Image 1 (cartoon, one colour):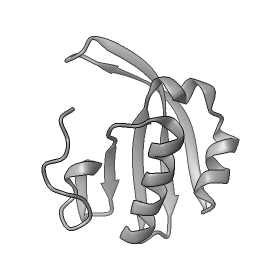
Image 2 (spheres, one colour; image 1 turned 120 degrees about the vertical axis):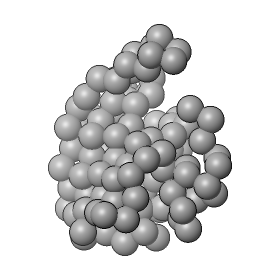
Image 3 (cartoon, helix red, strand yellow; image 1 turned 30 degrees about the horizontal axis):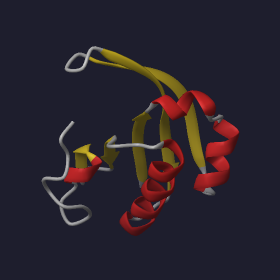
Image 4 (cartoon, one colour; image 1 turned 180 degrees about the horizontal axis):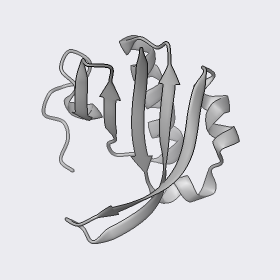
Length: 101
């Protein structure tokens, strides 16, 4: 059971993998990445985070911590075979139509 989350924001350039592990506090892998958005023609530093052995409630908690620390608006997530897409549209976890990105 793994939770994959791809995040990016201007704040990510001011954050380290070590700091993120301190926020997440679960077995995980963290890799820096760089995201480009065609719609807004912008690029940002970011992270790919894979968290092991996590349930949906813990996913919500970790998302709220990351969102607050990194000023995140949305994220692309994959949770096992359950869901893949914008975190804010995750059925039965978040409201289905919150994402405007």
